[in-house]
Amino acid sequence: MDNDNTQSDTLVEVQQEQVLHLYEKTGLSFWGNIVIAIILTVMLSLQIDPSEYIYLFIWFGLVLAASLYRLLVSRNFQKEHNLTRDKINYWANKYINISTGINVIWGSIGVLFFPTLVLYQGLMILSLLSILLASVPLLAISRGLYYLQMLIVLLPISVHILLIGNTEHFIMAVALFMATISLFAAANYIHELLFELQKTQAELLRQANTDQLTRIPNRRHYDQTFKTEWRRCSREDLPVSMLLIDVDYFKKYNDNFGHSEGDQCLVKVASQLGNISRRPGDIAARYGGEEFAVLLPNTSIENAMMLAERFRVSIERLDIKHPDSEFGVVTVSIGVSSCDPMQRDPNNPNTDVIYPAMLMNSADNAMYLAKRQGRNRIAKQGCGEQKIADALREEAFKDAQRTEQVMEYKEPA
Image 1: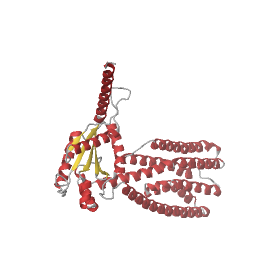
Image 2 (image 1 turned 90 degrees about the horizontal axis):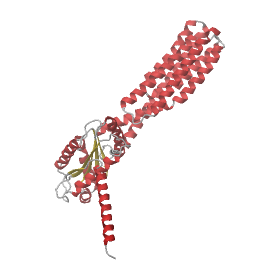
Image 3 (image 1 turned 135 degrees about the vertical axis):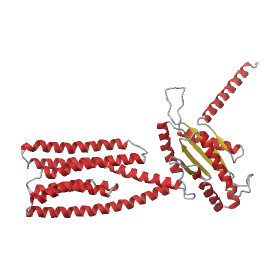
Image 4 (image 1 turned 180 degrees about the horizontal axis):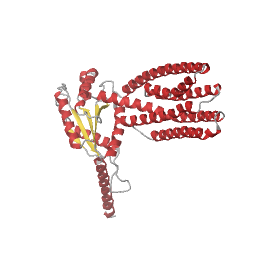
């Protein structure tokens, strides 16, 4: 289950990078569209009747408006962080729809304003091919979508050339067909190359997010997921619970049986984590050494305690012999904490602001409390309770100092 989650998250991360690449190139595409549109507009103004200038300027205005809109959309996209799969699909589809609309405008010029001079006709064809070259980044999303853009841009002018019917334009149509085939082959090659790079990138990310020993997510992936789920639960006003798990007397186990057996012990412990991290937002990871962490979004502390007890029992039932433990088998100590990440009003002194580190610190404190209480057990600490305890301890210390100062003042000279 954890490996499936890791692969799914890795795929989302790769898709996010692809869509990000599309939007990063929007500025260059914008200026390319505008420059080519200006050149064609000036050229066509020398060819068409002055009464048609208004239509030519309308066409140019449509290219400018659509390109500017795509540029503004790219600015909004770049403000997004930690995109979900649904949001990635939304932004990818938005980019595709806008780009298709722009290419429809470009394709129409081959019919609406076809120049009379062959030289200008060739320049128009080269301009349309340049527009298709600027759309090559769409291959990162879909090869079929790029072929659709080719059809939209080149089909109108191709049909128009063939309908003219003379030898000169027949040769031009053959040349355009050959250029299209070459562009088609190049697009196919680029798509295959991008597909292989995507697989390689996904595999590298998966390895970077996976603990090589236990084959579950590592701390890097856990920290990334933690930030995402914290923001989500903050928006939806949902609790977030965390389990911090430590294998009891693991150093003694390693010293007694060797590191190889110690590694196998950790693998067996990790194999039981799937019993408590079953939902899409849950994540269980190797936190470091013999420690494991489980994040449980939208889970109350009562339910988290129940899941922790289920896990503790499952480890005990593995019956991994441990002579140096008073329990005779490998056991775990578990710290449980839960927070409501909903941000309070910082201007109101009567409310607290909850931070992610407070959840992690509380779970860590609870785990050490479980160890001090005898190990092979669960302890809990509410989010921020340590802060309150520290504040009370500091106030008590100040009171003791004030009392000591008063006593010194009252002592006779």
